[in-house]
Length: 295
Image 1 (tube, rainbow, N blue to C red):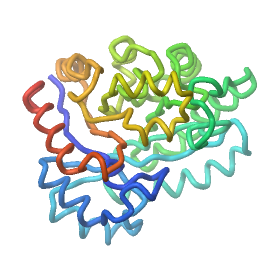
Image 2 (cartoon, helix red, strand yellow; image 1 turned 180 degrees about the horizontal axis):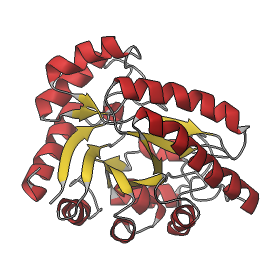
Image 3 (cartoon, helix red, strand yellow; image 1 turned 90 degrees about the vertical axis):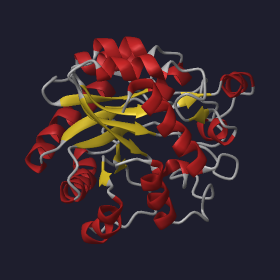
Image 4 (cartoon, rainbow, N blue to C red; image 1 turned 90 degrees about the horizontal axis):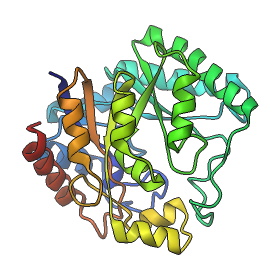
């Protein structure tokens, strides 16, 4: 049986890509409400202090630990050394916070942050040369992370060159399974038209981190019909917490619970907090997960 702990991402309180969403929500409010809702872990948001001692002083009394932290990579578009420098800074920070994995996403050629670019029409497609730079760079970064006690968890993501099932398959087939691991995000897979259970089942032994999010069906349809950007779809409410949409999150959670998986389930549902109260949705998700899989 697995040993799974439950965390939540602060992006429901304050959005990293659109800081105006939740700008009035403080860091202290965020972590206090996380703990009050029953979570024991948090990922890192843009309002979090970067000094480990200061961050510990807020998290420890609330019974919260750092699950991981997003790290943007530019292996396909910049010299490897530039990415490695920022990556080392993240590893030092995460080691000091006691985390076990570092979440990475290839942002070379990404359109996820472009406010006017239709998410379904213009995603990048890597050339063979770009794939080689990505996969070789990831293996190098894995070697960099190892002395810090960290593994890398690659985040497939809407609007990037690793989004679809075929792209995830290529990444997994082209990298050393002892070095490069996968983050499973239920929401991003369904948003893209993929099957989370297929990815979870086939790569169960390489998944070391899980983001749980749901999709609102009507808003997904609008994203297609209105040619919305990724950020536009978020503003429109395409993402929500597990149990509140069309994704079969329950089956994915049960698969991991019944496996040897040891790691975090992280609720991550970027919404406009002015429309979707963060504490209300955090407690909604906590209740759903407890009732569904007993975690």
